[in-house]
Amino acid sequence: MRRMPGGRFRRVVPSPAPVQILELPQIARLVEADELVIACGGGGIPVVPSNSDGYVGVAAVVDKDLASSLLAVGLGAEVMFLLTNVEHVYRDFGTLHAEPLRQLTVSQAKSLLADGQFPSGSMGPKITAAISFLEATPAADPKVILTSCDAVLEAASGTTGTMITRG
Image (cartoon, rainbow, N blue to C red; front, side, top):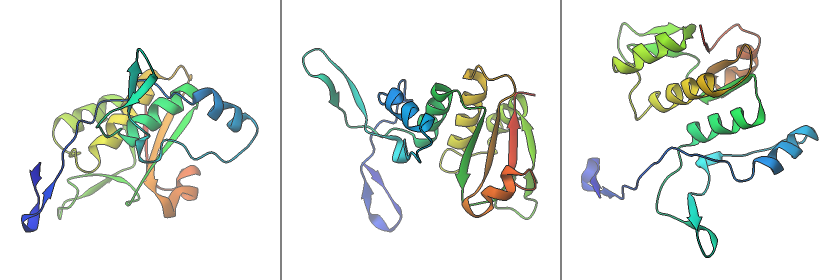
């Protein structure tokens, strides 16, 4: 349990990195059929292999950003969008000196992450997922675009958002 503001308590459970999307073949078939697929919302249901029952649920939270990265790699995506409530990733977010970062390489993203620019409770998981995708995908020229839901079309055309590439 963790004490929250206002004297409330919140249950804390592990959040292991996902290792497999069990429904990947079914999702891939739907994508190939041009169906709109909603997957990995909330990260998915955490399960582990069981000798007797196939899989069994566990008390954990699956990180939705890392699950999305794993799914994008599995589907062979060349571009992954990570949507949030701001149009860009920022250096010094929440300060008077906040600076939108329009382009980053994996190396730059890792450095800023290590410097504490992307806290674990906000942009950190999205940056980690972006790095994971870019390092794992076999795509020749992959990119990750981070932006807000309202700006996704503009970000797709390159006029807003933050683009992360291998560099």
